[in-house]
Length: 226
Image 1 (spheres, rainbow, N blue to C red):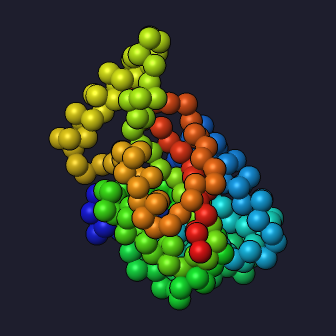
Image 2: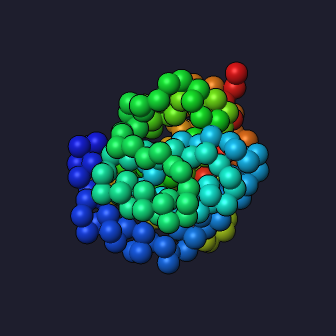
């Protein structure tokens, strides 16, 4: 999906309904639990950039953990919802309308970067571009969510279930080859290569939901090598 189209996707009613439409989903709940657990491992007072912040789903966690968070999003309507949430919780959280390709912050401004529900909207070059900016503004760790194809060497074709995953993955690949406007599924090797290029070390990787259609959705904790 192109950035300009993505920027127009979450305005008005789409922004207002965003969280209520998703918060009951098992994937959303699993994401929430993993991110909150990872955040809880950092000291109180840690500085966080959450981009795209969306409606501020992690704002309650930032408030509870005593973190100094800043949110950025390209959608003014999503940002406005996040601002109301922060105000209700008494959290002094700066919120800015800003895209991830050019984050309006000086280098190493934050100790932690959080980027959930974005990297599968862009192609591999888009992932590289986003991580470049996140690495620039973050001094310590990144928490990112991304879906990629399960490497074929990880599938045990003796097992009927995993053989089925192989055929499902082939079907997804074929569909994505003809439909270039929706969510992207990345190659795991390409994603890990980008991590290496950006001097990011994988500290932890958590498969958020069971393998589906021969793809895996992971939340990664990454450490910036100095």
